[in-house]
Image (cartoon, rainbow, N blue to C red; front, side, top):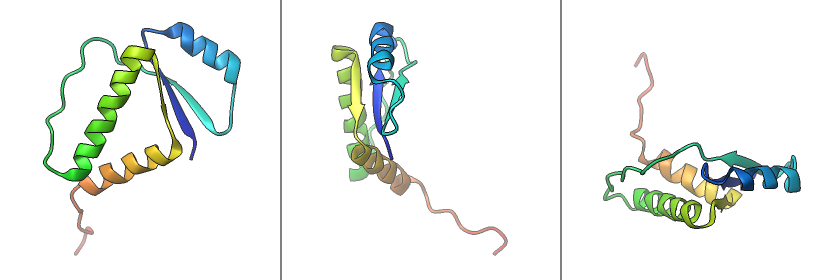
Amino acid sequence: MTGLLIISAYRPDLYDDALRSIGVAPDLFILLDRRVGERRQQPRTPDAGGMRVDRRRIDIDDQLRTSGWAFVSPKEREAVRAAIASQRPATSARGN
């Protein structure tokens, strides 16, 4: 899994600089955050895993707003992916 460098839509200059400086790196994916405008607050879930995901999303949003970029390590990406997967309801097999 690769790291993720997210660049704010309000800082396309940073996106261009990152592409020029880093180029195509096999262990880093550079993404331009296309979200613009005010972000709606997601309802908080009482689930502890959901709180971790919400908190991490808030951290990323804050960093994008203040710095114009945010880095998500491969370990953080996997933790968020696992927390989201654990929140999904279990599905039963079809045909039983």
